[in-house]
Image 1 (tube, rainbow, N blue to C red):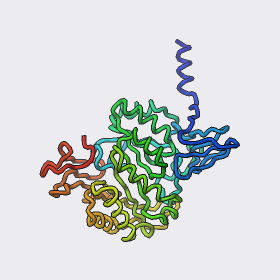
Image 2: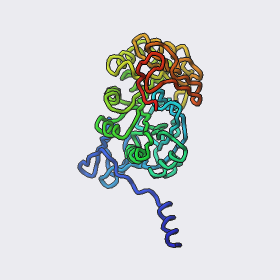
Image 3: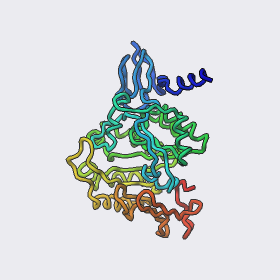
Image 4: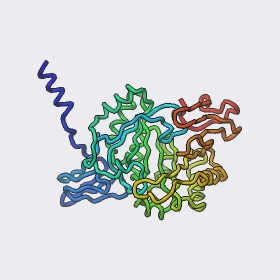
Length: 352
């Protein structure tokens, strides 16, 4: 019995075994090229990629973030935000350190802008994550806060196990991932939010240091997949709030993705290195809302503004209130079997 207890302690406290990364290729002189995101970093032996979460060790690429949890919390699903996916339920939200963007305004910069070994983390196996979700009655696990792409392997392992217990998997992402790994990942997910920082190459060069074309492509990939899909657009004063940029975004959604995609215009608050700007005026958010409605988008929301009427879901045909939201915790859902109970209009989403 003492030997068994000792073995259990060794297993429980043993350090995690390094996880070999997916989606990379070996090059000459023990260099590797990461193929996970559009940066496609060429990494010499002993060095890390741009995200600081993937390291070349003796000619093999390893994930440094696997299982290293920096944030874990139980959140309303609406807070992600998902407004058409299991409204009124909660998700276990998790994140590891790191990101493949360098957004100057990141609200979670104390997690996203550090490497896995630079801040305090706790190692948690996928089994432990799923157990926590089950014990707390979570309908889903949300991969969020930092950029889930950088803990790709861990996310897939958690998602596989979660599905065995009928727990859904949600990803909140900047969308900066290569098409092949994104399509593979979507096989294990149930819903995705792509969080846009603007809708132009100029904005992404200025605040995200990324190739916007790749993100634009992933919007279409998500739309064509079988997972539920919503979009957020962080409206930043003086950066991406012009009528032209907002209109270009709305037209793209309408023409290339579909008028039934839920779109959330989020209020910016000064954070990290972008503290000189004021919060987004509510009037600007309402302008964006009106532009979207003018171009025929059916489900448009304003986020980070408490008790706004534009947080509710209305039937696009008869106009009746279908989901009333007062903050994140008071949700009244009147949708019946995916349809408006007043006129029978089909409402896209996952409501049960």
